[in-house]
Image 1 (cartoon, rainbow, N blue to C red):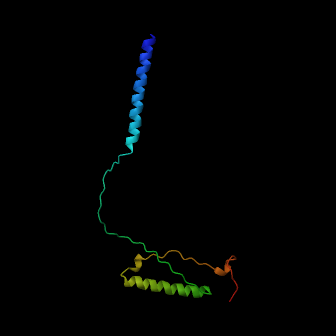
Image 2: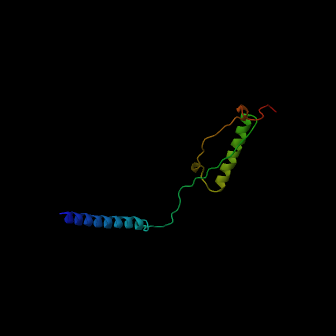
Image 3: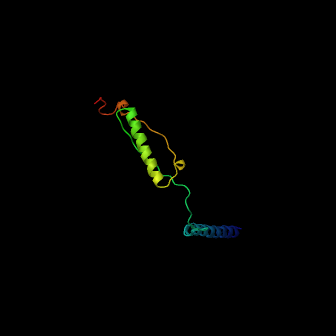
Length: 112
């Protein structure tokens, strides 16, 4: 009875060691392969282009800054028209106004 038990335990130990070695071998070799499902390359013609254009206008009064901004905007639109870009294809984004005299952390806010 003891011999049969010892043989069964020994056989189980051999099977367990074999399964463990196969599992460890599979772990080591699994990262050596890469599966590629396919790759295609073709050229396509773009139908959309985004060109952000930023300009800055400064002035001592709001009217002066607005006039400079309007002049810059007209110059940019004229340039785009020369490049055969339709004005309906141009989209104007937000306008940012910064009052530098209202900034309490600016160095010199005195009127000059």
